[in-house]
Image 1 (cartoon, rainbow, N blue to C red):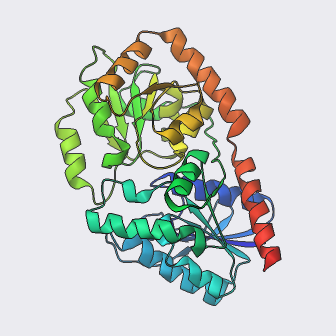
Image 2: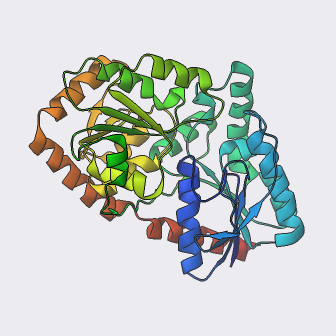
Length: 367
């Protein structure tokens, strides 16, 4: 089968969970003998012809907070139907819903992956939020089939729009590289730092963690890994109020990222928007002691393996939970072990890929 992956920034993964999913799905699809094409944005990815078993196609876009994604997806769709003619296209992000029907009209069945209600993200002004809400509404009808990554998001979508999405859980794979170069570069001691990894945008709530950290009496540093385009004001404010014990290394990928997750004393994911966050399932697979917010998709993923805090009562609620974990080494170890077991049984990229391929087989046969 020929499969096109469309709508993200592309691979190698260098930005967010969508790109992580695309990279792993491309690898799994290719390993099963399928021909995979991934559409990439040149200003967001390393320029390569192939990666993870997939052929990469780099097309231009308009570098704008509001136009970057949809313009690139439109160009990719035009290229795909004119030259590639895959058996199925897998699109990502509800904001691409207006473009997806053009693939169907050209005879290419499509799957649209929606990882949460993007209209709830604080980065969007009111007019953009209203438009994205319309895109979300049309998502289920735009593609041959729309899917999401958690039952919690499926519940929300059904309550809001009256249609149920099929939930396909993400996978997790984060082997320990056995190196310490990233730790040494940042002056960190294994097991003695708090870690945040994610885009530095308001809805990922790094500011709540920084505020809670200021309430702790600990020698452990806080390491805030990530960055984001078009978020200079937020990031500047975050750094201004952080203090000298908070380390901002920017983006860290590959072995460096794996080192930081495998060696952290506590990893915190305080996000309050979206579906399953790959950083959570990867941290679970690595056996990292986790603290997550009470955002429903987070709770669905971690079960009883992680410590949780109330977003409505943060930062104080987060500070209390972090303080309890920092003073309980046995509790941290126990949560890490339980997380690793849960990830191995529920979240694998092999299982995720098989679910997508089963759907692809069905819609291709119906065509």
